[in-house]
Image (tube, rainbow, N blue to C red; front, side):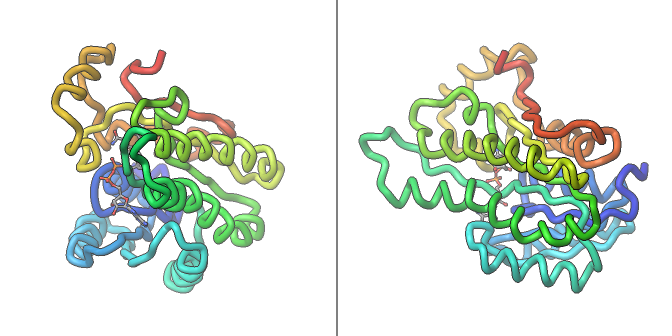
Length: 248
Ligand code: NAD
């Protein structure tokens, strides 16, 4: 399939989980992939190999999504290596959960920087290219807890709610330039991030999810593909939940 043939996508945090799932799906659809990682160079090389097997160009870059200067340097390097950028997926994210009573300032700042400021950083860094191209797709990874809130995740929920406000504002500001900005709100997706959750909490969630299963990175990647490709050409400023009906 070739829904993204000739497109260049930047995906942040793609050596595992949802980011890796999106990278594989996009590569299968013909996109060249530039992705970021934080520390594991060997995992990044393995992902490069997996993606290249689909016959596309793929390269991993060590880059901290929470840092504007690093992100600007990353985009410059991707432009030098790939010649263009058409799609950005702001996927990188962390949790530092805890009840507010015990949450430290660092827990708050780290989550805000990596989850929310990262989205500002990347959007700023690609903006000139997208405006020049009169074309661009931005997909931001929010969460159902960004819409609903969640006890013990006030920092994370606030960062994911902030992403929604940013996404909608950018959609209104840049829609006239043919730049689309949408958010995905995953529910409970089985990845390394959710592996560390308490078993009892997970059991409770599975009971509450109408589809009675956790989502997979591929479930999220399919929606990202819809938004990134021309299938989603008239979808702008939306938050699409991928949660098995958890948030209804
Ligand atoms: P994950 O922990 O498996 O993957 C997150 C990725 O982000 C990792 O590759 C990590 O290295 C990268 N990352 C972390 N800090 C970074 C930084 N400073 N710069 C660049 N990359 C960085 O998590 P996941 O479950 O795959 O989550 C992906 C995204 O989806 C996150 O934004 C997460 O908040 C969101 N999300 C996940 C779920 C879920 O149930 N798994 C639900 C809702 C939203």
